[in-house]
Amino acid sequence: MATAEHDYYEVLGVERSASDAEIKKAFRRLARELHPDVNGSPDAEHRFREVAEAYEVLSDAGRRETYDRYGHAGLRSGGFRPTDFDVGNLSDIFTAFFGDSFFGAPAHARPARGGDVSIAVEVALVDAFTGTTVRVPLRVARLCGRCNGARAEPGTTAVPCETCGGVGHVQHVSQSVFGQFVRSATCPRCDGLGETVPTPCRECDGAGRLLAEHEVDVDVPAGIHDGQRIRLRGEGHAGPLGGPAGDAFVLVRVRPQAGLERDGDHLVALAPVTFTQAALGSSVVVPSPEGDVAVDVPAGSQPGEVIVLRGRGMPSLQSGRRGDLRVHVDVRVPRRLTPEQREQLERVDAALDDDAYRDDEGFFDRLKSAFR
Image (tube, rainbow, N blue to C red; front, side, top):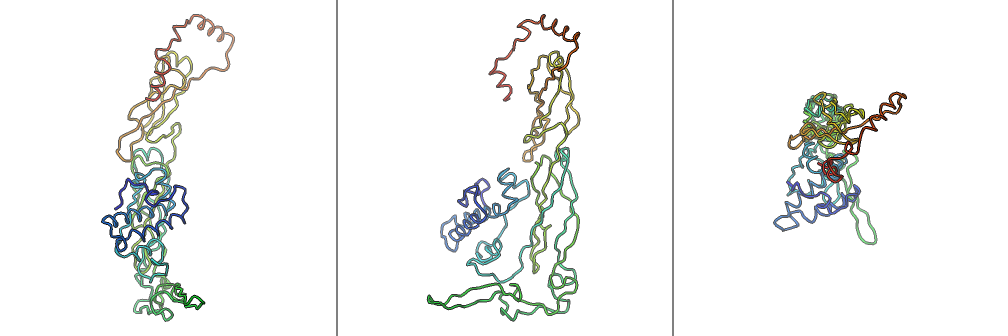
C-alpha cells in the first residue's frame, strides 16, 4: 500500500491544476517505468503501488475533490481503500484502470469489476454531532437470478464468437510505403466478450444482469463534515461475466442548525445583548447540538468579544475530541429614544468618568485573548 503521507500530485509529477488527460498520461508513463518486470530497483513495486493509488484517487472526480479539501484523512474517513491488484500482471492493471491493454489494444474480455454508484443523503447537524444510521435506496445491477450471470438460457451455453475466434478483438492489416500496419479493435459482433449466446436468457435478455432496487443502512460517524463521502464496499453494480461488484459512495450533506455556524470542529454562535446588559453583565441562551446553553456575559463586555466554551463544539472525526463553542457578543445599541430616555442617559453619561471606561487589558493583550 502506498505511503499515506505522500502527496498524490507529487507522486504523479503533475500540478494540482492538471487535467484528467495529463493525470492519465503521467500514470501510463510512470507505470511503464516502475513496473517490477521493467525496473529492477528494490523499491520498484512499492513506488508502482504509490503511483497506482495516486491515479485511483486523482482520476475520480469525487475522490479528487475530497482529497483536495481534506487530504488523506478525508479519504480514510470516507472509507477509501486502494485497489488490491496483482502487480505482476501489467496488462490486467491497465485493463482495470483504462479498459484496454498495456499496449493500447483491446484486452480479451474477462470478469471485470462492476461500476460504482453515488447517492446523496442529508442529515441534521445534531445527527452529525451524535452520529446516526440512515437508510438509503440504491438502484444497481445485480446478477440475473435465472442464468446467474451466464447470459444464456439455463440448459444452453455461450459459444466462441465466429468473427474473432473467441479472443474478443479483431486485427486489420493495412499496407503502406512504410510496410504493414496492424490495427487491433474490439470485435463488433461480440463487443469484446469473445463469445455469443445463441439462446439468450429470457429473464435478462442475455445481459446477465438486471437492475434492482434495495435499501442499505449507512452508518454516519459523529463529526462528519458536509460534503464528505462514505464508501460502501460491494454495494455497487455487479461486475459483468460474474466479476466483483463495485462500490456505493454516499455523499453526506449536513443541514445547518439555526443560530450556529460550523468552523471545522468548532461551533460559532451569536449572543445579542443590549448595551446595558453588556455594561452590567447578563446571562443569555445560545443554541447548540445538545440543546440550549446558558452563557454568562461578564459586566463590561465589549462588542465583538468572544466567550469560549471549551469542549462544547463538534467531535473530531479522527480523534473524537470536541472542538469549542465560540460565542460572539453582539451589543445592540438603541436607535430611537424618547426625550425622557435621552435625558436619563445624558445624566448617566455625565456621571461616568474616564476610569469607568478604563480597559484592564491593553490592545495587544486583547488581541492575544482573541487569538486564544
